[in-house]
Image 1 (tube, rainbow, N blue to C red):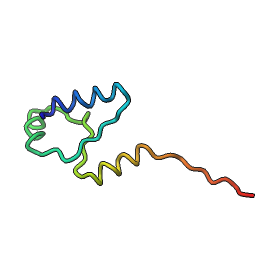
Image 2: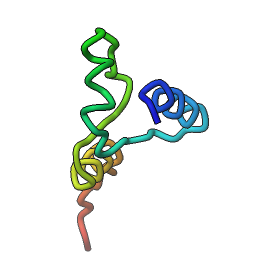
Image 3: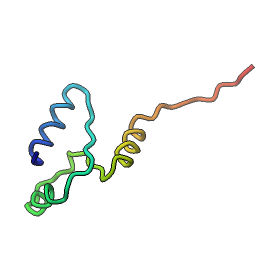
Amino acid sequence: MDTDKLVKLKQSLGLIGINAIFKGIKPGLVLPRINLGVPLDQLNVKGTLKNAISAYKLTHRKMTYNTPSG
């Protein structure tokens, strides 16, 4: 899959409310695009599954409030 397809996939998923996080995209796939000056900032790419999960948790944190008991 090339980067154009990934961008289209992310945009399509966004239409139905899904925020895609891509993990482990090989440099050989994106370097040619970067060298041509094509911005890939619309892709949310993380290097590892751990980083992807952490990013997901940061964007989906729920606020909790301490309520007095008694």
